[in-house]
Every structure is written in structure tokens, then in C-alpha cells.
Image 1: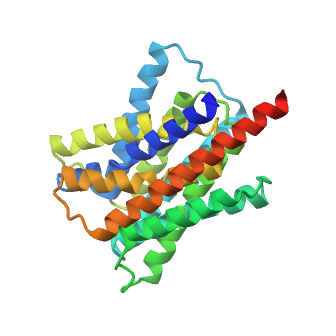
Image 2 (image 1 turned 135 degrees about the vertical axis):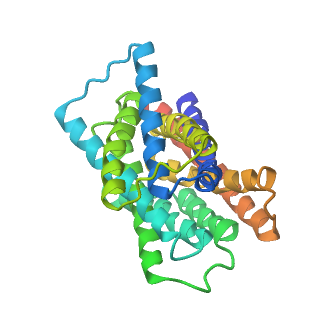
Length: 301
């Protein structure tokens, strides 16, 4: 029972950590960064910080050839291309609509888990998924479907599918039981090389930023990469990928709270409705995961 609770708490903590990235991005963009350079520095600072932690705690960073290949593919598709397609989609449509489409990933994770990884279909999880999608719509997509760009639509949708690939790979591949700090270190390191190359060839490599923007990239590396990515990877060791993807919808609630408290953004009735739907879905997933744990314990006895 304790393992399931730990996985749930860590996954929600990860979602809350990711909820700060919009705030850090806004600060960075206002102080000289662009989406490419922001992603590049985020990965670079995270890789450096994680390498220091790994050395301090003498953590073994060795991996097999197969694990290196998995990490490289995960970094390219599930991290670099995922972020870039999402950020570019913002140029073609509202961020609310883009993020709503991006949150297709819980659906993609559930479908793949059932048909590829043979995960059992549980009615409460399906209901939780439906409620979380409705909540996402009210929270960040309400009223934003009037002007849809097909380019932006597909880019945002692809970003969501790629993030589903990220969650499923961490949960089911040969890196599942690797040290989470080591996984995040390699993902951040590989992503630094990948995004540097993409930034350079696209002409987006810029050094016209100030210390405020630089501090924001350091903070997003600490909060989102180290706290967030490490937490969700640990959480996926204890709960299913489907449960983790639904719990991850706690991210926009955090973004909303950060926007209201720090940026003085507007709070409307539909934000409240969306938050309630997501919170109900989180409770349903929590109850379901604990029941699964109880059944598993009884079976072992």
C-alpha cells in the first residue's frame, strides 16, 4: 500500500513542478530568451547540476548499450521534439488550445497500455480519464476553439503523443529500474546536444539575454528537470503509466494558481469547474491504485 501512495504523491509532486515551467518561460522570454535557447539552457543547467549530485553521492552512471539507445531515442522524441513541436504550435494558435491538444497524452497512454502492454481496463480509470479531459478543457481550452490552425493543431497533437511515448517508455522499457537521477542526467545531457544542434541550424542561437532570464532557466532546470522529471520517473516505478498520465493533469491547476498568485491573472468560473473535474479524477485514480495494491497483496498471501 505504501508503494502506491509513494508513487501517487511523487507523480502529483512532479505535475506541480511542471506547472511552474510556464511562469519561468514567460520570465525568460521577456528577458532575451526564445523557445529554443530556453530549452537548451534548461537542459544544460540540469545536466550540470545532476552530474554534481551524482558525483557527490557516488551514484553509478553506467548503463548498457541497449539502455543508452533507449535514452537517446527518448531524449530525441519524448523530450526535444516534444517540447519544440509544442512551443512552435504556440505561434499558430492560443496557448490554451495548444495545451488542451497536448493533453491528449493521457488518452494515448491508456490506449497504448491496453493494446500494447495488455493493461487491464478499469472502469474507474476510464471515468477518471474522461473527467480529466473535461477538466483540461474548462481549465485551459474554454472558449479557445474559435480559431483553429491545422498546422498548430497537428503540432500540438504530435507533442502530446510524443509525451505519451515518454511516459510509456519510462514505465515499460529497459530503463524502468535505472536510478532516476541517472535517467534524468542522460536525458538532459543528450537533449543539450540535440537542442544545440537544432538551435544552431535554425538560427535561434542567441546570447542577448540578461541575468534575470538566465536565473529563470536555472530555476526551470532545478524545479522541472531535477524535481519534476526525477519524481515522475520514481513514481512510474510504483504506479501504472495510465494512472501517472491522469495524475499529471494536476499540472495545469498548478499553472493556474501560479498565474493568479504571481502574475495576477484572471480567475473565471470555468477555471474553478475545470479544477474540480481534475481533482475528482485524481481521487478516482488514487482509490483505484490503492485497490489494485490491496488485491495484489492478497494474491501474494
